[in-house]
Figure (cartoon, rainbow, N blue to C red):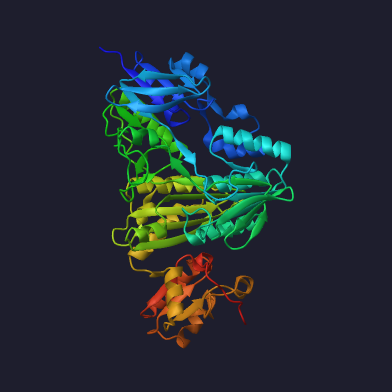
Length: 558
């Protein structure tokens, strides 16, 4: 039997996983890994936390070393080597030693591309100034860490409000640096729906972080010994330190130059076995495109969790196995000071863009029994297909228990469960861990109530459209007087507290469209049922209540 030679381009998550799995599948194979950087594998997702000292030592970020890989797995690792070209016909790669500048060729029987992705630097004046950084690699982090130590910046600006950007915000604030965020989209964390992102933006403001959305950075400059940022809104911000976190681009040049197919998402096209259109070449990690399990469409999934799965499969399959990576639901979670913010599947906006008519529900409930100390509120939004009942997505925000609930939702989406199927789940219960009706169970019950015809939802966007058109309907706020004074009301609303509704029924027109809302939806649902059983013909409930209303409100006039 011919001895297989496997060459792996790139380490970090996917490449290191591929090498280790390949060795566990074939002890006799020759395995060589090329890595451009000085370190074979490190915790990319932990980089922001090293800046603040939450992760105290650089060595804590190093997952493994070249010496360890050689001793444990008999993998020859060559750091500071760049693969420049693939000769598919001759089955060899051209490699440059970045230390000596020397060139060499390396033959392969199987090749795995795990070249990762590169942080995008927008083409704006001043982006090359010495106080401007990206946060993608360990070397990036070393430079920022040294800058923080030596310069002690008073003001920092993070450009881009995605996952890495928001993690950078918290960790820079923990270094006693005043931080602002500039985001060109209308909201931060664009994977969330608008009203959920607004909850996070409010939390940032509460923590002293200024957030400027719908603004694009137009220039950076040094003036008076300090850095400055200017936006297209005419705003100027002091920026002693700038973190550019506007996205990443998959490293596909090597594959493209070799004639391998690049998918519509911009990543290397692979099948479920991580194979490219060359039977001897596999690819994994941030450089490949993946399958969205909800839409069935190709997407980029630049997550360490995805890279590890893909690398494991690529390593095994390069040795003759057939391990599939079926796709991803797009599950993400991020820590934002005291909050955990998570999403899986489709957002409401994404579902609409897919041509679906989603059922949107909200649940506000404690992470564990309210009578047990230290219960914290969770806000859960679910998105389901109205016609098939299939759960399409979920978003969860709270201080505790967010990861547990989003993982349950991700599992349900993977298994194509219906929203009301959540009601049938037998989840762990004891007062310190959950309520007798877990928030996930409540989400299923809310869905069931819709599907059996107990309530009709209206989204904030739909209600806003009705208000702008001047439609004839009665809008009722069912909260307490104190709540109205604290938060204001939706323009045009009439105040009828839920406990006064029975006495007020005789004054209402059962033929007129009536829209009810409260804080999150529970009281308006109770009111909905009461009116429906009193023969009101057209009653709707605002999904998520006023907590989901991100449009203007007006003060309550008693």
